[in-house]
Length: 117
Image (cartoon, rainbow, N blue to C red):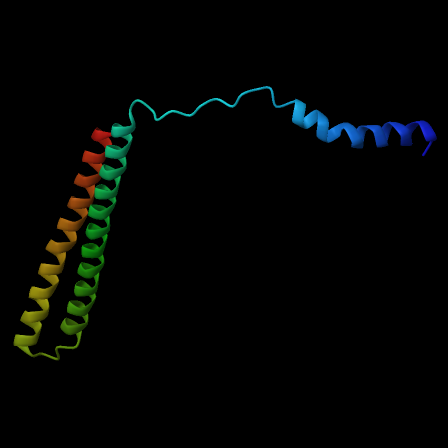
């Protein structure tokens, strides 16, 4: 490096902290609580409620699928036993109703959520 560039670099490094200290003449804007903070809190609570309802609907859906699979296995392995076959058929029908109710509940929750937001 040339002597002139070294001199400019050393002066710049020396005066850099002073520039940053003196450059703080711009005031940071004050952050006030928004006017609609109650609406924001209510929106968050509503979102939590909807998410919990969707989670319950999903759990009911999964339980109905397990019931359907167990009923199907019982029906296949009944081996001609009428009581076991009837129990398995009833389990399949009940699982089908629960499956439909969980899907309908999920759709209704999302429809209400769509119209609220």
